[in-house]
Image (tube, rainbow, N blue to C red):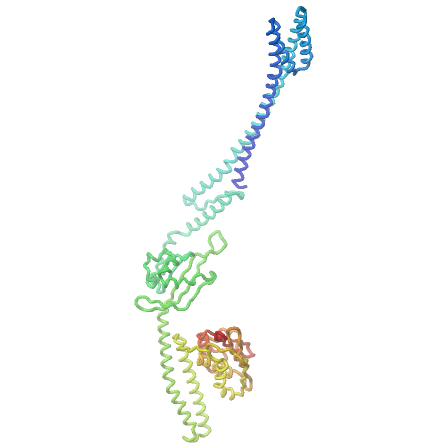
Length: 577
């Protein structure tokens, strides 16, 4: 039972007892009042009337007769005792005779005798009614005593039990708190029931358990470990920032303070929401903090930060810290840690690699073009006739030159992708014309394997926003791959479909297809499906993906091992079509 309920019942019971005692006392006091008023009003007045009538009989004269008449009339109106009426009537008759014949001396003694008889009757009535009043008084004393005793017993019981029910738990809790203050953290409170004290005991025991755990964890050791961790964080080469669950900065090492550019006293202990208003880097770091808490980390694209008079590149990683508090079951998010991994050196090496590849690839194109020109001259019969063996060697050199030229072109395209300098000329174009250009470019390759290119396209196809040259390159690459991996005498299906605000172009081959475990990797750079005997750089699909996505489109593959593959590019339709 709740303490409030106990107090309400206890005070309410006392209130009811007071009302009961008051009701009993009032009832019997009213009964005594009624009995005494009955004596005073009836019998005492009759005695007074009788006394005045006796006094009037002793006197003679008109005034005395009038007094007797007046009191006798009052007596006739105050007949309360048995036999009092007949005696009063007799006195009236005798007095009437006396008024007619005053010389009759026998009438006055008879009248006096009647008056004395009335007085005797009323005296008896007073005695009898006094006994009734006495009995009423005894009952009143008894019932008031019984009621008072009952009220006293109940009130005394409440006085003994109610304060102890409240005071004893408080006393025990006070003693337990004193024990906790003396660092006796094993102290526990045991209150039975489900009232407020039971809930208080549960909360107190949880607090004591946490204090015991905290005390047993060796505070000095914790402080030393804290300093060690702070020292390690400050000596890290990568910037590290710690925040609580409300995004208030708890710590930041020296590297983080340097790149943020805010003094330590203005950074530590402040909320990132306030710092983001005046610092763009802080806003960038915390803008995607509110990701799913069950995600262990969140790696973003490299961030370019200008610090110490030079540019640096950092890769952001966010760790969400959750713990299960002692005595609880649900995990709670207690903060976040932002780690900025310094990848400047790797980025510079990547730039150097990209520039090197671009330079070498560009330089390769000139000698390769010279080789191809020389091959064309050798193929000209006006220069000289070649025997069969020389012709075969010439074809082999020609294939190698073409392969080198294609690799060089792919490397140059990749350098554009890596450097972010993709030059696009996005204009409205007819997707069917782009597809036909790619078909004509690969027609000879398909004829060599006796492969049929089957095109399906509606008559009224909307124009798309695309770079004509880059999109044609992608389709040529997809068609070349389809021809390379398809079987001889097979058919490659090409289709154009308009869907909502996009136009899709699909290339479906009849090759062996791609195993499911490799479909997610097929667009990665330098990736080639294991086991394939066909040669390639593994860059074509990666470059195709970059070119299409740079135009706002998408590229996908649908393949089942043993049933061929279907590559599909989607391009945006020109507005208004």
